[in-house]
Length: 320
Picture 1 (cartoon, one colour):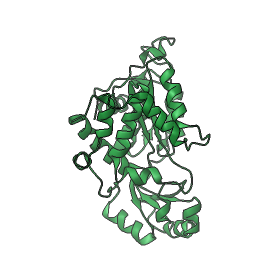
Picture 2: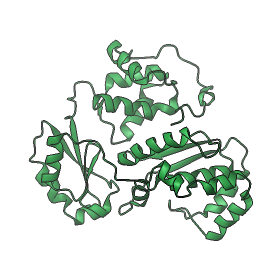
Picture 3: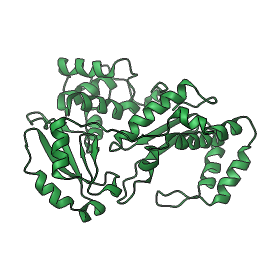
Picture 4: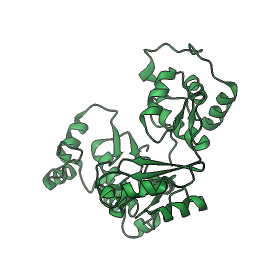
């Protein structure tokens, strides 16, 4: 995958005076060393804060108060800024001083409509009798697996049509990571003609105006609530001064919605080619893909396939 250093955002903080020493509490040396080891040689930029929090959570199973202080020092941020971000996302387990750390395994049971109708409440009640020392059981908002209700997750491992027996077996075996289904990989997609449309655009066989007109004539609209025409949005963004950036929001959380996850787990390069055509048409300098944390299988697939795409690009690529 291209280097995570995408856009230098240091200019965004120029109005803030650089602080060589944080006010207030100083970092614990052990916690500071742990955070520095996890960050490695990554640039200490504020836009990587969520990524760094994930590294701490994954390594330690939680984010201790000492790690928040250490991370704030490394990024030259106020501790309150780091704390506010860490506590905003429910998959970060922030542990205050004196509090016990969470059990090593977390089971989340979806509580939204599809899963409620399929027996989520009864499942939660039954799971409450499992070993509380090894795991904790939480109710959760929609995890995007509504076609397999009731759905649950053992760590990052989704359990479809979940039962207490299935969940207990996964916990006992330590199956806490997602196992994605079979998908069309980069080589398979190329063999079936994948990326030829993108190559035709880059080669000038298709013009930007013709692509925008086709999109407008299709009457495609965004599904985020406003129903804004996609073709019109592309034209508006293209008319803006450079640099232009693209944010791909894969955070479908509406009850009953799982379309993005379904096709990303099966045909990821169809999504990537469409994304790159949009980037070409609008004149995008860099692309940010935001993927919800519940879609660990999609993340594994996209990470692998973006690496394959970058290793043998069908045409020049923007930074992703």
